Length: 227
Image (cartoon, rainbow, N blue to C red):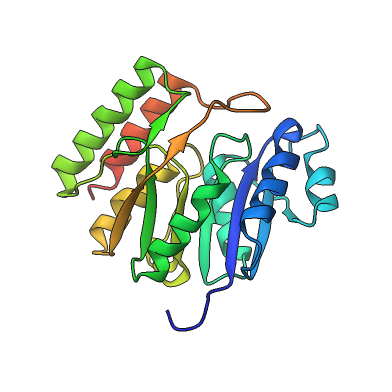
């Protein structure tokens, strides 16, 4: 990229009032000097004041017509103004200081830059053994079936060029969205970079992930994209 890109940071939320304020403030402090927008995509069922907090802190707030993390991200991507887009969580588990690493990956010429908790320098304070096993299993299945070399599968802290996002044609409405991104990026022959990322314990709100239900969704996503 020649000129510095305009950056859109997409944050899907569902009752995240406890964490969204600190998340936005920390993002703004890291992004000082960049041209950017923060886009909070709040579930229409969210009732705890997340929207008001985000607006007061200068974020754009969108309310998608359908529910689900995947749909929120797709809706946010479609309505974002940036030519470099980043997805991150609202619960303080993603460290805002890593934003610059995700931005640098796209500026260096990669189409997709994905945070990985399993590279040297990465890690997690919020991954029970069953989830770690599940992620490793899904990574192995995808790598075998699609010829990729991923180290992490179900982590949402990642960046994209706008052109690459359009190529992915994302459709997953729920927690299969990251897996769909990985598979379609590989199938499209995009330039993919994984960078170390450290996942902190969530600092606000309640986790929405259900290990077994969403594990089934992820496996279904893997098999569905074989076609």
